Length: 93
Image (cartoon, rainbow, N blue to C red; front, side, top):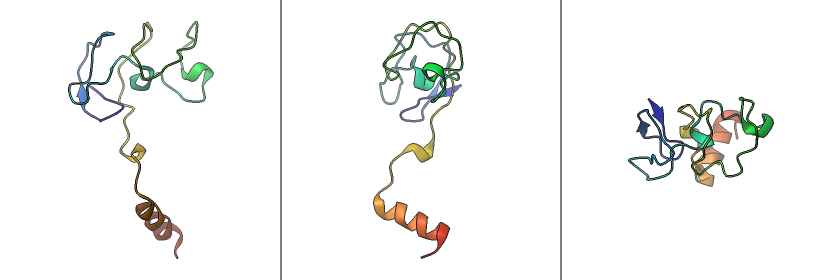
């Protein structure tokens, strides 16, 4: 079972190009949900893909797609006060 990159909901395989997240309604077969997605790699993919996928947040026809769980709690934006407190806790005031 994978997780939606945007909301963290569980997604069950199989995933098709038209599959959407049951919680947030976003496309599921996207680069951001793929186990091969790797920012900084050639075309942001660990597979040798023949051409770049320009919009990594929209469904695509990639044959290498494998559902992953790239959602991370820490991706969500915190308010500046929380960020400052975390910084102070780490390094002292």
